[in-house]
Length: 102
Length: 304
Image 1 (cartoon, each protein chain N blue to C red):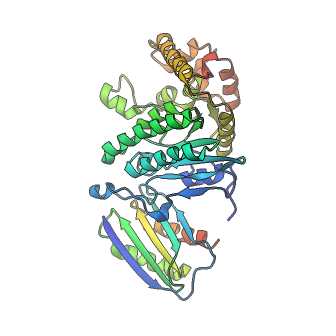
Image 2: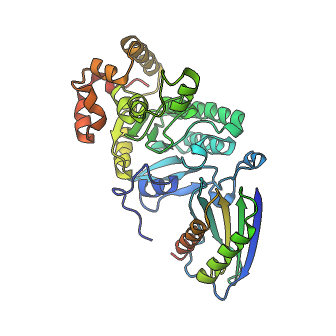
């Protein structure tokens, strides 16, 4: 198992008031994303546990892209990965952000 | 966000959380030990396997057509919905809470291959404790209803748990058994049971067969609304739980063995049950199948 943590500063907080959401399932090629609105409005932390070792730079790029697009200020995002491809990870992160914006 | 239409949500395709939110009265679900509590398996990291925040089971309370219920939904896609220590502990705790809360029912959305092999001892214990807790809840007058229609079916210890429920509803894709197709083939050979023969698997363990022989009490379409309607009906018709019920169940199972013990295929059993055209059963629509079931006296009973 590999544990990765990325911290970002955002230009704004994520809209909406939902305090917590979860999306996805830990299954082969899939992942679950738990989002909690518990950080300062301009910060975002994304913690990942993955059984696939050695892809830290890919995770870093996918997470940076998500943060730039969604500006998820205030969120702590926790991921249990089941070996998802980068596009699936992007999709789930954006789905999660959408749920939090409700 | 708009809630999903329960008529349109396929039980088979939905996740445990999607089933729950479309099944209960809108907005009434309150989760116990939700994902943010991070009660995850202490065992899986030893095997370098990923964990789930809810350990593959969602538990809580809500209302069903206004009736207060306790409810659990297994996630069949996480490790085949299998029972581990935390997963089982959450279900047992929910069932024990029924003794205090006295809900109108406990609903278990079963979707499981049985015990999680990496947590074998804890998982086996969880199965035994769950069966005990179901019996205690039923003895206290709380019906326990099992709903089966997920991709993992209901196998292994899950099949045993299903056997202890007050009532069961199953869809065509739902399968109920103890040893799964691959297990039987591995132990007895492909001539005894060819696990790749999907028609054989469904004839032997599928929802229609279980309904016809009285193993399940309702056969429903693969939609959340169909399961919801069936659950409401079954709650209202849960059998008593006393010595007479258990004696009746023992007698039912003994006579079933005598009557069908020498059958080589489920179609033979259906023929002996009085079904005119057994070969037509697998392709029957739900409505046509309901008519067939109505003509089979063994299909509906108050044993259990």
